[in-house]
Length: 255
Image 1 (cartoon, rainbow, N blue to C red):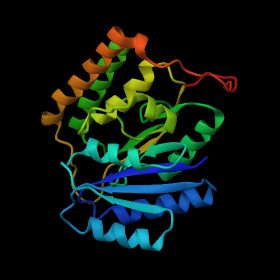
Image 2: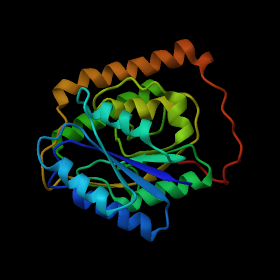
Image 3: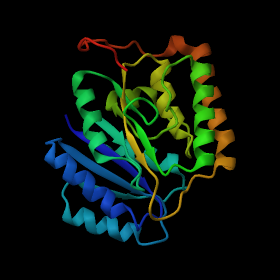
Image 4: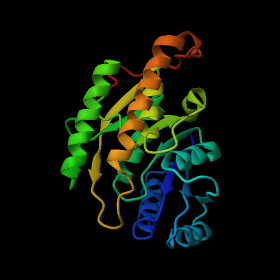
């Protein structure tokens, strides 16, 4: 089962080479068949040149240079459209995600799950150097989503997740163009009843570059996406495609 790793990147010249090299090393060591698709989203630094060099050196690395309107969500959508694998993982380009967790995601998909959601806030998960304001907003937002969708998943806003490709195709078209894509990709499979495993993951604050997330600007976009999926669930759930439940999952809880 080929794994497509999709990485959006905007002005990550200080981080992206190490991120890609670490992923290649860890996935090769774990014998995970893979391709790494890095989407350069209008970088004004040397990110694009670094990625082109890596793609020339490493057969499993592909680079997409975006020409349309910029946006984190648009970059992810373009990467998902270009993927060739039977499953995919979305990984940040700033080094915040652990490559070993990508392998854990892949093993869960091999067990038969449709999606794997990492959580930094369950037993075994951890965060390192998480900005306090961002953490507060994260916890409040995720609590709101847990209540709105009546779910035990507690890290729905994190982009770092894995999906079978058939799930991505079933929930398309994906609407979000910015960071709110993280909740759209989390909530749509949840409300449609796909089999989701939750695993504890690590998150590391960036040590180079600057964050692209602007909380004040994005909060209304997050809220819109939550309400859009909630309305979809309650008004047109009868239009969701029927889910094939074979093969059966192994015994034990999904999360």
